[in-house]
Length: 322
Image (cartoon, helix red, strand yellow):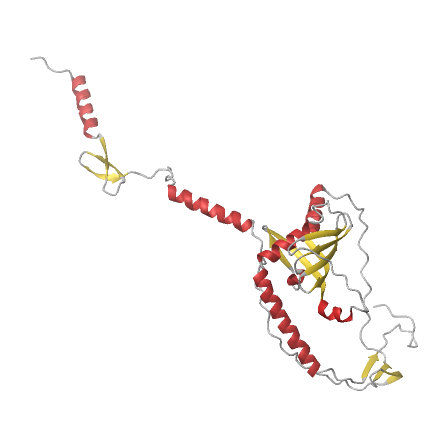
């Protein structure tokens, strides 16, 4: 029998060793992958960067969240609370008596309520001289606004409402405003009470913030009709909820857009606005009753002026440098 060459024996031994170390991939009970070799306990496979798959439930939750965000961005509402605090009487003013000073001149006049108003020129002030005013800032040549600045200015004008109105019987509102871009004056007759927004500083319309200022007067036609023979009252007629542009350019939908925005915010928050205006009415009634029961007491008033150095009332007419 021939002897097996040494080289062949070595190759066969190496192959057997490699086969004995062959990796076996198994799956554990919890679903994780284990790596094992013959005679070695299985070890968990090192984590990889493969991200977990997104389930249908996660997709539905993400879609619902996106829909909620879109609805919030399109909302029309008044942020914050519309609570009105109860009226609290003001704290009485404490008058601090001033020490007497030497008066060099006195002028006294009698007011309409039989009280006196006295102005006295007292002794010179001992306070230090006022510092000179700072120099004016250097002149800067104005530059043309950039497109971004122009767009920002237009956006601010379109989101800032300054309105005046007369409201008849809380049903019809005659509203006046000026378009800030064209400086054209507009007037609209509206079939709703714009006075419901009195006292508000702003609101949100379709996700955008608006600032709001209103000066209005409530007109009770039942009182005016008592004097119909002496004063002819002309109240504009309009369908409830309608808007009629009676002044300006009705075709300019951008300039007349404030009325549509006002209508939307009143429709969206009418219940809150009614409660808010009722609370404001209660507050103003309580304030008026308290002030009527506690009218201000007329007093003799005295104003004391103390000339400073450099005054023409003093011997040294030239002020000293600080």
